[in-house]
Image 1 (tube, rainbow, N blue to C red):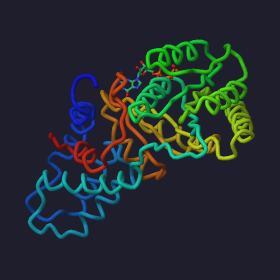
Image 2 (image 1 turned 90 degrees about the horizontal axis):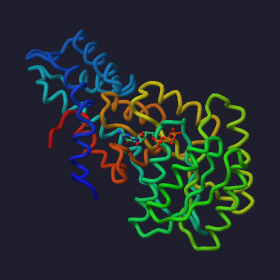
Image 3 (image 1 turned 180 degrees about the vertical axis):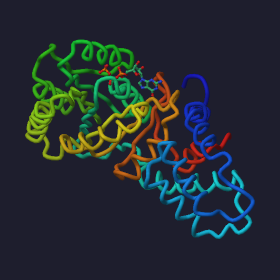
Image 4 (image 1 turned 135 degrees about the vertical axis):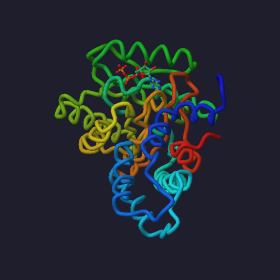
Length: 308
Ligand SMILES: Nc1nc2c(ncn2[C@@H]2O[C@H](COP(=O)(O)OP(=O)(O)OP(=O)(O)O)[C@@H](O)[C@H]2O)c(=O)[nH]1
């Protein structure tokens, strides 16, 4: 593992997000009973912090229920926010487990270009290698030679097999070959990169449908997972990507990347509240160890401004 423990990475990665939330909540509580105006302000501060209207509403409801006759200090308020975030994340934190039988488990990875898809595939492959699974990659994003090249570099670095074709090649054909090879060589998990062209929904839908058809011929259960990679720095736009990809690709779970260096990490909570889709892992940096499943309680504590 490279520098720093995972909890240090989380603390560092979410610092901008938690600073923004803390700043937005500063000065909103008093020593007297919370009134409606204060509740409005707190609700607004949570929305401005990207936590989403659902979470803001839950915190408000919780604050109105509690009597807080003698007011509430900022630590108390942050504690309540943290508890509500933990409840929400507990419902969605779900590591990507390898349970498919027969093997291989086929994981389609989707997402717009630049979301961190390629890096996430490499990081997931590394996580599975650490669990002693045999991993193979399939370069199903045939639209850009660069995407194929990048994935090959990662496969080489990780020492795992990859099935790829030429730029402009037939993605479904590559996936078909990959599943056959993976089955023949006893691979546990096949991770498939796909083109992320949301600009042309119809083509994307057709291509994914073709991949599914081809996979289904080899194994009716495949793909076992359809994982959408989202870039947290896109804020609200990440939420609309979930909406669209759900419609075109039948998303089964999410990975959110680039949570480091953005103040918009609250979007993770907004996504959890709005869609309830499993969140498999989060990315807090560019190195191979920077993607992990997360402990919802600890992450909520970090987002709400915990410093340890
Ligand atoms: N800071 C940070 N950077 C990340 C993270 N994940 C990916 N990146 C970086 O984001 C950039 C884009 O990542 P890629 O994996 O190439 O993304 P992609 O979606 O495959 O994008 P294209 O290859 O352009 O289609 C790269 O510079 C990555 O190193 C993360 O969690 N944190």
